[in-house]
Length: 260
Image 1: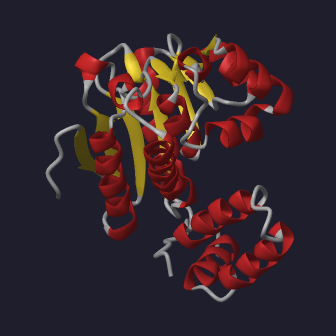
Image 2 (image 1 turned 180 degrees about the horizontal axis):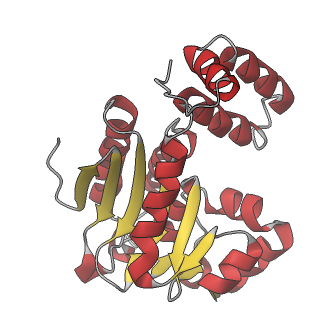
């Protein structure tokens, strides 16, 4: 496993927990941390022993409280575009990963932190979590995909309000809006995220990956989502997991999936 300065990685029973470990900076995303996240996500892709992943933040105050403002203050028109595109690339890797990734949000998820959470396939939040895209307070806008994903998750009107006012919302409101899947007590956060992933990991891995691909196709303007679904359904039906799943159902036993 690679060595990281700003992340902690812990692989247990197929679930890789990736902790943003900059508690003294409220886990703010600087350039080096984003680069390390890219390497960690690549491990999720490449390591067969990794079946799923969880992103969370060190400490009790923040998941990720935003980007590193000192770095942002130095950007110009050229470096700013590169800054945004690098972050978008990394967060797209998370969104399109064929293994399930959950954000376990333990506190503030603001700016880049909200964008990181939204790139994950699901979000579990503690009762004290807060979400927001306050970039307008700095004279900029979200740059890591926030304008796109927040709109997809909560709708155009509410996304406009949140991004133009810069307001924070509670975990309860985030759940009501569809931004968060579950809200739990802080001590239940990792247990809940792990339980959901364990349930998903008991299903056919190929089918899980294709669900992710097909759902993402809904938002891809260059892709016919229905055709993607039909192609994916056909692909499933040529897999050994399909044979195992249908046989197990007919034989009234639990299936043993291999991902093939």
